[in-house]
Every structure is written in structure tokens, then in C-alpha cells.
Length: 244
Image (cartoon, rainbow, N blue to C red):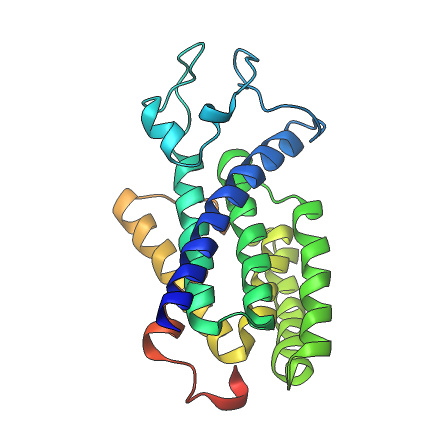
């Protein structure tokens, strides 16, 4: 059983690396309003990327973080997000095993990290990245999670409605609201609150250290949710009953 769990964990980690590489490509093309069909190309010189140029993390290291053709520097954000996705998938699996919560977790972290990239690079979140997977998570929660309607859906709706106030005041982006509410839909009230606390703490520490007044929030929300999954795994979820 231990060997099987280890094997599945390794597969999940690799699956996260590969999927994030694909999501990075899709996210970049959507931001540039390009079709997702066709071969991957360097955005600078338009050189077609071969299989050896598309190995998650390793291609970045082997090429010293540069395009193989024009030698333009590749942003460190891409291999970082590949690792973050793989680690988040792994901890979702370690926490929940192969269950509906595992499916919900990888869907959530996939679009959350994609949104983190677009928010970091462009300053906004794409609705077509957030809304479809949110609907899938909502349906999975309602139909397959015990107490899902009460402990996940209702808190998410309440949080969403409350956050419309700072949106109207211009203090919070409309795209941020949906993702924050999604955290409560995924984690429930208890761990949704913990994810908010962790995300806010990481954001505040960054702002104090680097003396920033305004920063893109979703990347830090992604960090906070990754830390939430790690916390759930380390401290166990079996004592929290229906709050999970």
C-alpha cells in the first residue's frame, strides 16, 4: 500500500508539472488574445519549440532560462508556477487521496495559479479561466460532498456578497472577489478563513519588506491556499468533522 501511494504521489506530481506547462501556454495566449491551437512558439522570435524545449522546469534549467533560438530571457515565473502546481497537487493528494476533494483541489489550484500568472503579469484575472471551473467545483460540491451545500456553498455566497462592498468602494478588484469566494467553496468556512488569514499575512509581509503600496493580490492568494493544503496535511483533518 505504501509503495502504491508513493507511486501515485509521484504520478500526481509529474501530472502537475506537465499540466502547468500547458496552462502557462494557454494563459499566455489568452492574455495576448491568440488561439490556443498550434505549436508552442517563443513569444519574442516566434521560433517553434521542440519537445526538448517543453520539458517542465528542466528545459528552463538546461537552457539557462533563455530561448534556444534568440537567447531572450524566459521569465522565472513559468518554472516557479510549474513547481508550485506540482507541489499543490501532491499535497492535495496526500491530504484527501483519490476522492472528490482531490478532484476539486486540483481544479481549484490549476485555475488559481493560472490567474496568479495573469494577475502578476497583466494586472487582471480572466473570467474564462475562473468561471467554468468554478461551476464544475460548485456542482461537485453540491452533489458529491456531504454537508457541501451548508458548509461550502452558503459561506462562499455570503463571502461573495460581503466583498461586493469593497469592490463598490474601489478597494478590491471584481476578479479577486470570485477567487476569494472560491476558497470558501473549496475549503469550507473553517479552512477558507485560514486561507484568507495566510494569504493576507503573506501579502502584508511582502508589502512591509519591499515597501509596496499596491501589489497584485492573486499570486499571494495562491501562496496562501497552497500553505492551507500543507497545513491541512500536516495537522490532519480528521478532527474537524463536518467543517471539512
